[in-house]
Image (cartoon, rainbow, N blue to C red; front, side, top):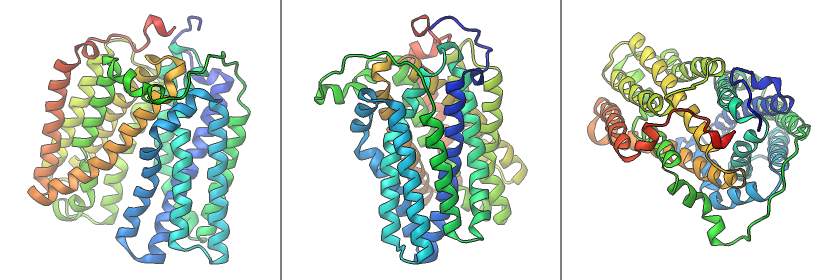
Length: 410
């Protein structure tokens, strides 16, 4: 692509505006629907185990189909894949609305529909990540990630609240609104028109299916960024312990827990808005390592805090520093990867993210059961700092990385 002022807004590009609008609508629908499904399943079962199964059922397709979804994203029209997945999500939401309205929707039926939604998301995520770099010049890409991340954090904050508010009118209403948002997202995605150069398709075999893993393994900058972010989330999963901290350590009620849960997203939203206006232009590697170190320090402060105010500040800083790491990782992964392989690499990246989130919650819970809540959170923060030190030695090319956008990406 031609050189472009990296201060230019990605919203100047019509394809990105359509993409961004679709992402907001889809993410808002997903957040609203997630709240509704959780409440609905608990109303039907009164089982905490059933609530846990919802997350597992959604995550399994990403785990089982990681190699397939990446291959599909690299062989077929990514716009069509994303649009199809959003349409499927809308249809599943319509079935949820109809089933709950007519009274035949059981727990098992919800799990089946959630699994199908998980399959759609498994195909949509790598295609979406690989599709974005095709919409804007490489120099504007970091700003686009910041803007996309900001809108995603906004939906994480607003979506559950809106879903809970609408749920008062009944689950069918939430599902119906979600269906409208998903189908509207599909419409915006379908309106995107860009010219994508045709590339020769490699034969589908074990080598091409594992190409994403092989590429990441042989690209120290990409491997270092993905694994650093993964281990930071895996070890620093203090947010999984928030209910216990709110009740036992900070001695606050549900209102306090709500504030604590919102704090990381507020920090992430503020940072993503800042990065959308002032993207990281120099010393990207050092900034990423510094951000992860701050993430670890914020986790330690939170672990030792007995003050609600200090805990909120620590969680806001935690969310903001994590967003810096996320933006740098996403930019490096997408800009360092050839377009013909972005789908497979994105699929592996999404698997890493999903695994670290799930295992991070498990690690925090298991460690808390063995050592206690405060030692578990404290150990996670210290472990994150140790990872930063080790990764600076293991991946010196990442530590020395200056610009997010290399000359090869332009």
